[in-house]
Every structure is written in structure tokens, then in C-alpha cells.
Image (cartoon, rainbow, N blue to C red):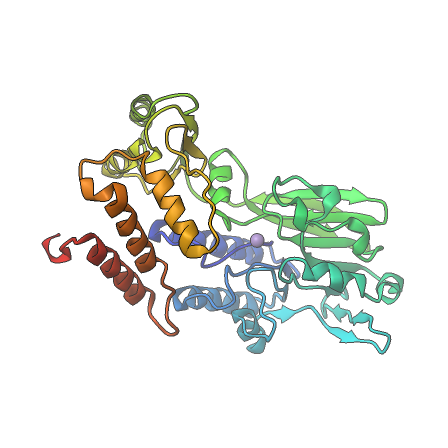
Length: 413
Ligand SMILES: [Mn+2]
């Protein structure tokens, strides 16, 4: 299994699903009595996830360990740490999982990978972690392939990255590498990074398999789930050769998706369609995903009233309401390009040229005073989090800045 992304979810209801899906997948491995588990990266969403996540992960891996099931892991691009500063390394330190990558630099500059042998089955496993974008390729190009390819026996290669020949997910092409960079002649290639299940055979590469994300690791994964993308892991049966590769679905939750095309329409008619559509569904205990896209003829994108929709769905018991307006624009209000010799000038010009498109009753938000206010607000919002500053403290500080600039009394609310 791969791309579990533990710790990605921010919403409590989704955190619970993320945990349950992981636990059920692991429980199923225990009840199937698998010989071992392979995780080719992105087990965690970040290298050091919050304590809540570490707790349930350690508890589950302890059970896997007690069931005598080895877990072989490489870092993904998310849980990677160049200095072994990842919760992956803690799990490896206590012996619950085993890091596969055993690389040594040869005198000629090439990189030699050693095999690890699974005690019970004698399977030989080698692999490479996913690195930050672009670094992988360099690493693969330096690999001492001959020794990897010549090794006898049943061999598995773990890797984290996209393969151009297998492209199925749009928008990720730039990061993919050619298949030929992988060493040949392994019996099975356990791939991570691609979030949709994909299994293909190529000459010299008999089985390249991406199980895909176990639940969701990108925001778009939830949308894909809502559109019917199945999630789970891959169960592989082998003796001296692969006998069977089976996708095992793990259910996660129930979804409702509402899509509205706002192209050439006005905000009122988009709002009306949204309201009609949400009344057609029963959102109780569902993850509701609302996607509004296209270029409106009139009004601001903020006129598409999502807060009323969110309230109504929450009142009817929706588990989570996700609203995606990323691809919604308006002809009437679009940021015009502004030039300038420096940051100060560019900011000034952007605000001055765009503020004319706004219609507010409060006159101080318009004209020169509006520009000055916008600049002050930007200066207040642009501040970075301080070292060791807690997120809650940072959020409070930024809000205070903004309300201060706008002259809003926060105590009154
Ligand atoms: Mn991933």
C-alpha cells in the first residue's frame, strides 16, 4: 500500500476516517496473514506529524509487529527527511518497520544499492526513497544498475515517483521520469506517488504497480473519491514468480458531489442552481463536495454565496462540506496586470488599477483611501510565522493586525 498520508486531514470528521481506513487496511493484512507489507512512500503527510497521528500509527504498527509481519518502507516526497528526522525513523528505530534504502557511494561516483532479504520468504528487496522534486532523477542516473539487475532470486524494487510511460494523472507530467531509469529484471515494482491505482507490464519490467492513495493525500483526491475512485491496497500472491495481483478495496466514506458551471452566467443564477441542487440531496453523514467553475459575466466571485449553502448543509447533518471555487472567475472583476519598478510601485499600481472595479457602500474602501487601506492590510497579513510561534497565536496575531487596520472592534463580535 502507498500514499497513506497520515496527518493530511484537517477536519475532525475526515481525520477520523483517515485513521479508520489505515487501521482497517492494516487489520486486513493481519487477518490475511500476509508475509510482509510494502509501503513505497508517503506513509505520513509530513516528516513529523502531530502527536495524535503518531500515537495511532505506533499503536497499529505495534500490532503488526506482534503479528510478526515485517513492514518495508521507503520515504516518499512528503515524509522524506534528508537527516533521518522523520517519524519513519522512529518507527524503524524501535523495529516496527524497516527502511529499505541501503545506499553506498562507490569510488567512481556511482551509487550501489544493497538488497535486504526477507527472512521468512527469502525475497530480496531493494529500493530508493522519493526525494524533493528533480533530485530523484540525478540519483537514478548514478545507480549501479548492473549489480541490481544481475542479482538472482525473486526481487522487489520499491520506488516513489511517477513514470512517464504510465501517465494517467494530469498535471504531474513534469515530475515523471522515464521507465528506463528503473533497474530492469525485478519481479515486482512497488510504486508510490501516483494517487490512483495503476498496474502495468512492460518489457523488462514485468509488474509495475501503484496501489494509489489509501484515502486522500491531495484535496483533489476527495473529489476523485466522490466521483467513484476506488481506494485500497494491492494483495500480491507469488511463489518463484508472481501468481496474482489483486486490488483490495477499503471503503472510506459516503460522498455527494454537486457541480455547477458558472460560465457566462450571473451570480444570482449560479446561487439559484446551487440552492436547487443542494435541496435535491440528503447530505446527512455525507462528505459533500461542491465545485463551481467557469467565468461569470457579471459580479464578483464572492457573490456566489457559499456560506449560506454551507450552513444549510451543516444543518441537515453533512459530515463535511468542501467548497471548491478555485476555477471560478468573473469577466467583470479580474485582476489587471500592473507594472512597476519595485514591489512598492507594483503593489500601488495593482491596487489603484483594480479598485475602480469595486462597488462598495463604504466610500473609505474606494479611491485613494481604499488603496492606502489595502496596502496597510497587505502589510499586516503578509507577516510570517515567528520561530516557535504556535499556530493559534500566529492566527490571533494576524487577525488582530487585520482588524486593527480596518478599525473593527473585535470585542464587539
Ligand atoms: Mn503521495
